[in-house]
Amino acid sequence: ADPIYKTVGDSVVLNPGQSFDSISSVTWKHNTDFNHINRYVLIWILLPGRYLLNKKNGSLTIKNLTRRDSGSYTCQINDKVYQLKLQVIEPVPKPTVSVKCNSEKTRCYLTCDAKINPDVGTVTYRWRTGEVVLSNNKELIITTENKESFFICELENRVSNSSSDGVDNPLSSGELQTLEGVPA
Image 1 (cartoon, one colour):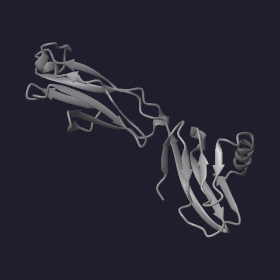
Image 2 (cartoon, one colour; image 1 turned 180 degrees about the vertical axis):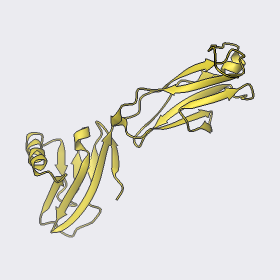
Image 3 (tube, one colour; image 1 turned 90 degrees about the horizontal axis):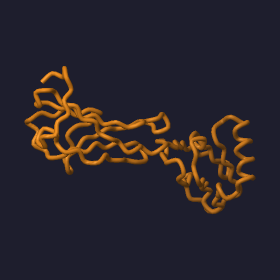
Image 4 (spheres, helix red, strand yellow; image 1 turned 120 degrees about the horizontal axis):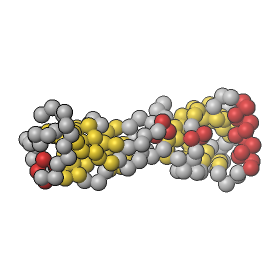
């Protein structure tokens, strides 16, 4: 089964995906490391409001998720075993755009910059103008043929997306940053 992706600080309901006429026993385990399970149960006892067990359907709600909550969850209900995977990741940061143009003012390089740490997971880059997607790369190369008036860089991961402020087309605004040695 595909993992469930959630953001740090969110809540999640881990549901075995089954309905039961009656539940005689429910056991949830996190990962297979018994030391970790014991610590997890201890945390559950110390922070009872963070973990909520629904005794009617066997689902487990975890509030205020942290990266440590990522992993495999095994649920045993009435001697049947269900497995789920949870991946808790950080949201993507807001990107900024850096612009460098050649001295002939015929080509510019727009780079989508953001401090991406490993806790964000896989990130997708997207350049757009309005609703039109121009590229799925970190860098966008524009020339005098590009008639768009502005560009926006977007970052996206499994739990969030974020857009840069719009950047005016530097080849149509007359406000160019020149970078010596960049080929035309």
